[in-house]
Amino acid sequence: MTHYGCSLLSCGVIDERTFEMDDYQGAVARWCPGCGDHSILTAVQRLLEEEQLKPEETVFVSGIGCSSRFPHYLNTYGFHGLHGRALPVATGVKLERPELNVFVVMGDGDCCSIGAGHWIHATRYNVDMVALLLDNNMYGLTKGQTSPTTPLHFPSNTQPRGTYLEALNPVQATLGVTNASFVAQTAEWIPAHLYETLKAAYHHKGFSFVRILQRCPVYTASVYDEAVRKPDVIEMMVHDDGIYLPDLDQIYKQKIVHNPKDIDGARRLAEVTERVRLGVFYRNEALPRYEDLRRLPAHTAEERVRLLSEELDRYAV
Ligand code: SF4
Image 1 (cartoon, rainbow, N blue to C red):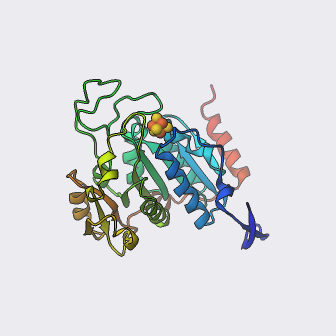
Image 2 (cartoon, rainbow, N blue to C red):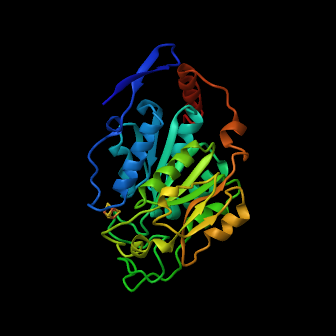
Image 3 (cartoon, rainbow, N blue to C red):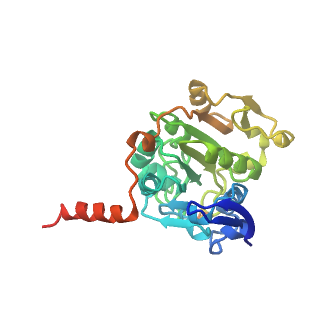
């Protein structure tokens, strides 16, 4: 339900709308019962409401996969694109319309396999947007093939006797990319941590990469089972400049103080151990952003159409 507050639109008209969670509700989500994507959608809607993001100034871009249905379930602008290509689409949107709030939703196959090149370069370009990796360790939409993050020896439709390779570590990989400016990890079954991580990512000025551990009860039900049932498997990385939720102390007793400015510490903590580490690994707003370096002149809509026509004319045969 839209209520009415007050803000000034660029055209000078007073915008009196305020938004509630229902205002961001799109189509009814068709993910499987128990799928972790449901709680991620709720956390995102909560963020949109809390930050009062205008639906018409907010864009969700996705590729292909279960999680890539995200834009359909939100009442914002959306672009359900090609497999692995969400990041270049989102980069184009943000470069041309820097005033928009741009979110990217990718699965592990989408981001870490076919989209891996885009993932590396989007991290390096450091364009201001929030990139969410919903990691269920499997291709779910196409019925259970090995993805880059499928754990070693885990059976899949493509490797029924178990996978041959160690899983790729998306956090470690992102921290290794030149100009990475925000890297965090959270889990969808801890809603308070998930929400705070999304909030920190949204407020970061630059490319915010968040890996969200996401349960898939259909194909990888056992992967996060231990981490869900035994809170001591989780180690919360806490810091005043990162995320610290004292209310979670009762459940998640394993904590480590980590300053998100410390890139070497972040890389050490990102290594796979018996612990699952959640929090902000790295944050640095001093790194260059591509949109600032590029600084193209602003064009009116008419000028854009003219420039596009001129460009297309160059290819006329
Ligand atoms: Fe979610 Fe898995 Fe179902 Fe896909 S297959 S909607 S990831 S539970």
